[in-house]
Length: 263
Image (tube, rainbow, N blue to C red; front, side, top):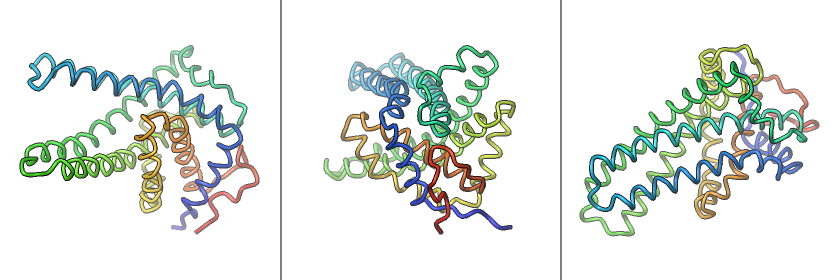
């Protein structure tokens, strides 16, 4: 079976062309999601500091519940932001308010929550396996490690786990695209289709995740403010990756670019 040509370099070039036309509009679309994400991180840090060195069972329960709820809210905002970016890809003059259209449509709101719940499950499961377990192992063997060594290992686990989480979550974001493309498609069908389309392109998808390592550090050093640019950049990259994998490019906002034609 012949597969379409997919180039990470060409995809990112096309996304940059789209972003450069309306970079502030794209960043504005990411703002609500980034605000919720920053608030989520700050609340979690506050709960950790408030609990002290010997957190009670109640402290741990509150931390876990707030973590699950906050992450789900971030995922819902990611879905809504993705809908705006889908429209933005079609028309760089798309309104930021378009991300909230699902609120007035009960059917679409239900689909938003179901799709967000699926993405949430993937993020939590992959995070527990690839970040939670290594962190627990590290905490059990931190004796004898110097502070610098501990910090380096901690950052290495964080970056590697984040890339793996992004790898799995990318399929869910692709499923979002399929839902926006066909409003009648069921969430489970969109998820299955996204996994099927991405299956022959695992190598290219890994390369796409690795290409964002520098941007991850940028976001860390800018206290997540860099997400205003990086988040729409990443989501749009996944949208174009999906379209390149299907081999069905159409001239939208990136009209005139040689989409997906690099080997």
